[in-house]
Length: 530
Image 1 (cartoon, one colour):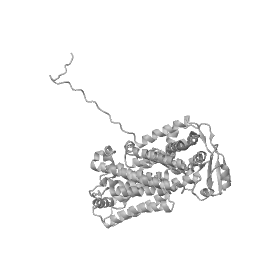
Image 2 (cartoon, one colour):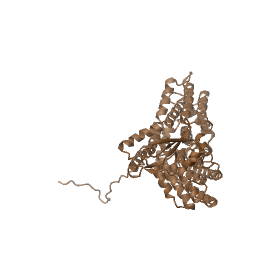
Image 3 (cartoon, helix red, strand yellow):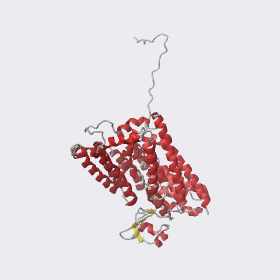
Image 4 (cartoon, one colour):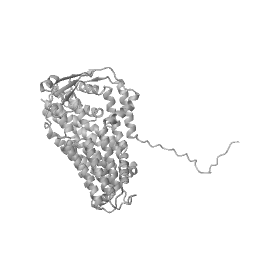
């Protein structure tokens, strides 16, 4: 017997509600995993090839030339030998230590037998990339441990409470100051990778001021990237690129200074507009969907800690916070004046962490030795995912280098602009550097690989080589704002922010950099062409 369905008379039948599935943008791990697979696949289709590479050996005081087949020969470290090789760089740049990475030798590109990567190389490259990035990974883990100790001491809570009371109604002043300092750090010393140290100290402050994760990344990463985009005396960008191009880095510096000032004004105004919108309506936030996760990760509780630490700003907490802040000041000084790199920075942060552990653990009101050690371990473990992201990103570059396709892309780029002249040539150069920024997301790495090949092209069209240096800076960094192979993925992982949310905020800055940079390049070409 058929079962009748009861329907109320006179009432229209209601259709069942359709469930709408919300698209979740992939995580940083998934994005890099997919890119690694694509890079492996590219090694099967992109022709293999390589330039001969030149490297200075301080031990033997010779120039070592490695040909595309891997054979190594040595020549005297003299200017005459460099000229014979067609490398228009002063020998002092090698012997003085300004150039420490292998330099491509113009006119030496050779096609090589295909060297396709396999499925096993997907995971192997991730491991190898992690090994190659061990210096920054150790630094991040030590940083996490230091943060864990300072949090456990209660110094963060008390210091943050005092700061928010003093900045009430003038919250943007701190964002403004941070952005200015990051621009200056970026344009003078390339303060970018080291900036990961600033997120843990500033994220809780920006949360307390009513801002979101976008403001945190914008004031630190974006502002620092603007500074490095328009580098003036940055040794890792404008200086090394100028050296590799065979020109003095002061050539064209007035254009870079002007561009840096304009870029600084633009990023500050953009941050002010966004901060004002978020303060007026928190739902305006581009990362509003992840606000709870972001707060759970970085928010400092107003309540007393589980260890019973008092909220009062005691002398112990003040001294701990003073040491914590001093660690960043010491780091900046070491990078700028002592040529520190990540091992030295990690050692200095570890020393500060040990001092803070003694201050927090000892004495009548201390939290104890075990609590300090546990806090350090917990803090380090919270940043393990960030450290692994860096290894995965470097793994992509490892695949392309081992598959012998990186130099092929550089060779194809040099051929692409052959025969062009004037504004079209320089705009194409900027686009080429934009694309190469994805393949080689290191400013110094791309400089020594590409400048000896691409800078001489300026001679063929009658423009100064320093204009190529500007095209390199403005093109590559427009890509590094968004390149998953660069630093941004580790940054987003640290703040638990989706890549799609970042893209929504950053695309106007990418467009600005390309349009503004392209306009300046065209003007330069028209003014200085022979």
